[in-house]
Image (cartoon, rainbow, N blue to C red; front, side, top):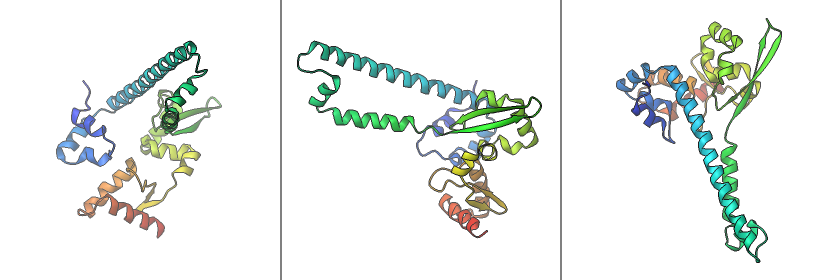
Length: 225
């Protein structure tokens, strides 16, 4: 049985998700402590399978609709193409907008390449990390295993990418500071794991403060370095 409770899953399934909502009170924090990391991996794998399956279903449905329209055009003496038929029906603008929306959704995935050097075998292995999900091949790679064994902090995907993906480091530059620690702050969106950790520590010293105040404070602190 998964250690991810229904309450945790319901909070994950929101467009306004922030990691802080998973630890709003003592009961939430107690539930999180019981979560097994492998259950999270299973959920990620299942969601990726679902995403692929849904995309295939939608593509199949679109293909069937296209075939139906093509069969109608083939039997017609007035229309020579599907596009001509849709244009007459006034659907050409809607079709273009739909295609643009689909293209935008398809391009929202963010991928970064990581190159690990295996000195013992004189090899360089390249891995692609998409949406911050580490592929199984990378997780099982002995070089990666040695890296995280030496530095446990690099189990944080953000920190690992910053250390081993120059492209990631360029796109997400260090721009905030909490006490002696510098980090990347997503000023317009949700906090990453590192930012959330510092936010929780900052709240203990500023119990009346909110996330907006935290972002302003750490951004200002970095600028004053």
